[in-house]
Image (cartoon, rainbow, N blue to C red; front, side):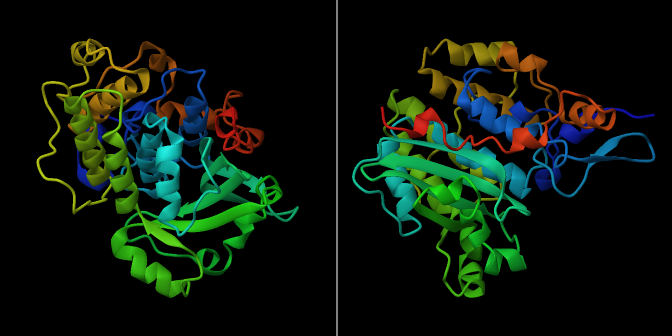
Length: 346
C-alpha cells in the first residue's frame, strides 16, 4: 500500500528530516502566488525529476539522494538561505556587499536585481546544464550576471566543477550579457579545499559571509529594533538548521517565542499579522513560524490561505508517475526567470 510521507518523517531528526510541503522549507515566503518569488521557488519545489521518492516495503515513501525537501541537501540549503534576500528591497545596499565577497563590484549604482534557482539551458547547442543560482543586476553600465555554484557543507567538487564551470557562462541567454562571472558559494570550512582544487582560478565565498550580509541588512529594515533583532535571530536559526554555523556576530540574538513560538497555528500566525508589519517582513515571520513548527515535529497549518492548494512532495511525485499533465515541463525549467523586470532600471 502506498502512502504519503508519514507524520514521523516530519519530526525533527536532524539533517535527514524530509518536509511534506515546500512552504515549511522556505522561511522567506512569497507574498502571493502571482509574484516573481513564487515562480522562482516553484521551479525548485515542483521539479518531479529532482524530488524523487522510493516506495519502501511497508508502503511508505522515502526520498532519494537529491531532494529539495530534505534538510541538509544542497538543493534545500540554497533557496532556504539565499531567498532571505527578498526581504531586503534596497538592492543598492546589499548587492554590492555580496559581489565584494567574490572580488567583484558594480559599475556605479545598483538599480535593481533579480535571481532564480536551477536555471536550465543549452550551452553548446547539444548539451544543457543547470545553474544553482543566477543573479542579475542593473547598474550604470547596464546588465551583469553572476552564476553561483553552491555546495552544502563538506560537499565535494566534481571534475566539471574544477574544469567545466565555463559552461554556465556559455548558456544561451547568459552569454549575451557581456559582464558575467561564475563563482563558488561554500561553507567557510571548505573554502581552502575549493581554492586548492581550482588553483584559485574561480572566486569563492562562504555561506557564513552571505549570512553576515543578511544580518547587517536586517538592521535597516523598516520596522522597530525588536523586529530587526528577531529577523536577525531567525536568519541565524535557519542557517544553523542548514548546517551553516556563523560566528563573530553579536551575542544575545535569540528567537522571541512570544512572537514566533514555532507551533504553526492560526493563532500564532495571527499574533504576527497583528503587528502590521511591511508585507515582506510579515511573510518572513509567518514563514519562519511554519518552518520552526515543522522542524519541531508539529504539522503546521498553511501560514497563508492560498498555500493550502499547493501539493505536497509525495503528491507531486505520485502524480508525475501517473502521467499528470500539470507536472513541470522542460520548457518550464528553461524560463529565464533571473532576467525579470525587477532587475531592470526604472
